Image (cartoon, rainbow, N blue to C red; front, side, top):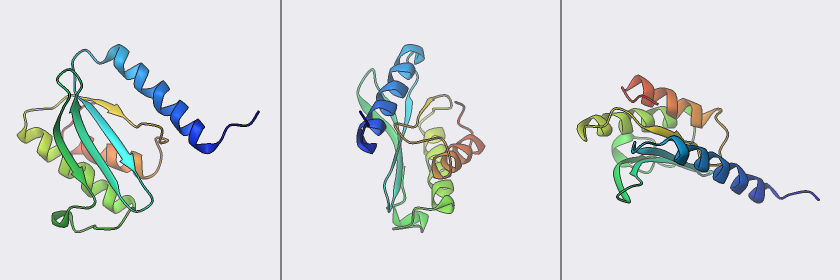
Length: 119
């Protein structure tokens, strides 16, 4: 029986998140969401249930509103890394959700690493 794309996505997301929970050790989770038009990312403290830092391509300051390409992903990753440093965070776990680590998600991760985040 063939699974739908949505079910495969949800299965990948839960598999990835369960692996992260096992090794998290109190570190914040860098969660990525990608839509057809935008990309957003947040640093989440799962113990307290709060968002520590966030960045999105919807922000006017980044100059990439409505774009979802490699350039926009890189700017969002760099902005998040800068905000994480201001919040005193330098180590986290990367939660790609159900998205494949390729293209825009990889560009975001590389920019965050260049900005000083370790994961």
